[in-house]
Structure formats: structure tokens, C-alpha cells
Length: 303
Image (cartoon, rainbow, N blue to C red):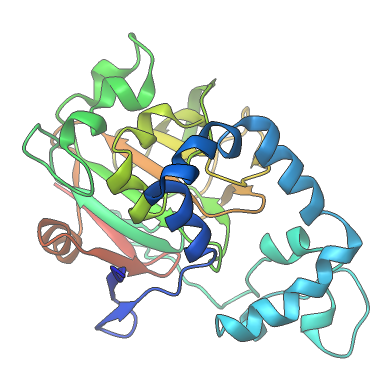
């Protein structure tokens, strides 16, 4: 089996990812039968139905085993809404656990005007400027601004600019945040399917990021120019929820929204020459390795 390795900036070492549903993903994308069933599993209806079951009270039984299997530091998070002596028993459903929030002070945001904060706690790849020679984990052709944004008027601001992909695993914190202060200029959904965003799936189907369901917001930020902020749906993601009011200006680090059950992805595109991903991320990306960051850590710097 091919292991998924990433560089953990927090521990300063290369680690092996524990994949939730590993056997199912391999079956779906590597076996003839799985490939035949793929259109059903990646449909909106399948993901919505799966998400429904994660909202049922009976799904709470999965929380404690999940925490223990993946060594989640649950004391870093706020408890759920069910009274319980043990925080692991406080979540009324698996989805309530899935969208858990950090306790105040558990994550800090970089404050320098030249530093962009990590908008998700995730595994990142980053490109200073996208072009057809960029490869990770698919050819750069599938990562062009025009294809990702799918809007013939909007994408032009981001041609040739920097790009970062933040991949959230099912074990991760699943709320996403604004990387800087600013305002929302416009926002729109992009219809699509719900393929997995696991690296195994991306190698099998390189067009996932431009075929999956996603939501795009165009942001005007104080320190980094315009940003295209794109949330990508994935297999078993019941819903992408926008929790911030579009009409309100946003602050650095403020929550933008969250994903209900399933691993997923946030993609950030910028204007050419405005900023670049942090150098360790660029180096790791060139070596085919993701970089794991805590929420609010430096993710990019102003040029």
C-alpha cells in the first residue's frame, strides 16, 4: 500500500497519515467494481443521505472510538451540548462532534501585516505562481484559475497568481476562517459531484478540484489584495455551511463557515505578485509533500 506522508510543521517531522475509510477509498478508486459504483457514491444524494445519518442521536456512539483511534486531543475543544462527565460523551451526534470548536486560546493567529494566517487546520500545498509545469498531485492544467473559479469574468484577476490547497481529513477541525480582515465582494455556488479529495483519489482522477461541488467567495483584504476563497465538497460531505453574514466586514481569524461530515478542501487563489506561500510549504510542495499547519500559523507572506 502507498502511504500518505506529510511534513508536520508543529512537530517538525515527516509523519504518516491515518486514513479514515482507507479500504473504502482504495476500493472506490482502484478496483473495477468500485469505479463502476463511483457515479452513485459521488452523487449529491448519496452524500446528503450519509450526512443525515451523522445527525442522528445513534451516531454519537461512534464518537468515543473515533477519538481514541485517531488520538484526537479532545481537551483542546469545547464540549458538545449533552451534559456528561466525560467530554467524549457530550456530543449528541457525530456531526456535532465533527464541527467541534476550539477552546479560547488553543490557537493563535499571526498578527504581522506581512503574514497571512492559516485559514484551516489542514495539510497544505502551495504554488507561488501556477503554470502548466506545476505538479501536485495532478498536472497544473487542472489547477488553473479559470477552471477552479468557473466564472469567465472573475477568474481573470487571479491568472498566474499564487495558489494554496488546504486538505482537511475527517480527523481534523472542520471550521474554516478568514486569513485577513476585509469584505466579501461577491459569492456564488459551483455545481458538481462529490469525489473524495484524498491523495489516492486525486491520483486516480486528476480533475476532482474542477469537477466537485464548491462555493467561491471573492474577498477584498487589507493586506493581500483580492482573494478567491473556494470551499470544495467531497464524498460524504453532507453540507458546506457559511456561518458568516455576507454583508458584514470580516476580521482576521474570524470563522467563515464549516463542513459537515467528511474530509474536504479549501482552495485560496491570489493576485499575481501580491503574496506567496510560506517558503517551507513551497519547498515541500516541490518535493511532492503536504505541510500540516495549525489554524492561524503563518501560511503565506506579502511580496
